[in-house]
Length: 304
View 1 (tube, rainbow, N blue to C red):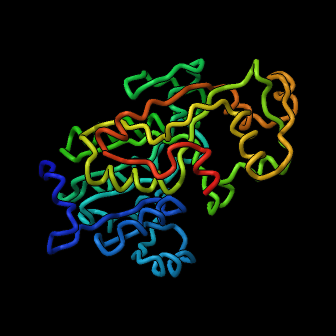
View 2 (view 1 turned 45 degrees about the horizontal axis):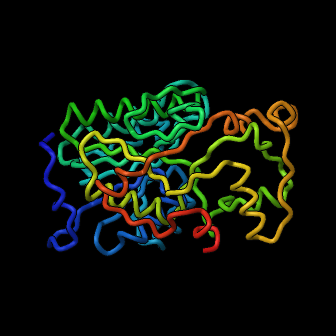
């Protein structure tokens, strides 16, 4: 595979539009497609033939294939200049065979220049509220996070071996008023408890529109084999975030309880998010990707 071409390959002024393959074209992928439509030729891998009509309506060419079935991925080889990989790993295990299958298919022919991968800030595990940058050593505390670490390692090794520029976006909680399940008022309305101040944890957020813009910026300006925090400027504890959402939605604030009390009433998945505290530094997002956030804080984003 040839060495990475300069980022001008993806300039909309070129006579021939570059091709982007979106793998995992859900809510965020469609937001990226909306940003890039007309400047890129857009293709999306989907495992559901029923989604093809919706993808076409969004200006995206659907390609039916399944990351869990490697034989269906043969057409991906040599298909695109860049890949936006937003597909999650499987729900079980400590590795991500889906990313392995994708990379095996992409390696069959030359031409690929760039991959942007949507990872998670959960790869750091609990940081005891520390403010961290991308040099922090990963310490996944769950199989869910370990699967993401495995995907990141595979992608970076692929980039080093082939010259493809790989950008890893480590993403915290995504929200947006027009995103299914993406506004905290839904949890507030259910009366789900939050932690008491003494046990509360720092949490991080990004508006779905800003995340889509971060993906687009990474396609154009991401440095090779680089990690970037796709997070806004907010530094809030989790319960304060839900209190803010309640106040803006004119709903009662959620009840607070100790960590031990919450562990007896909430699911293990919910508790896993309440056991990790960190504050993400987003300097690279602003300086390297030159992204100016439309919603720099959750207060502005929730109001929108």
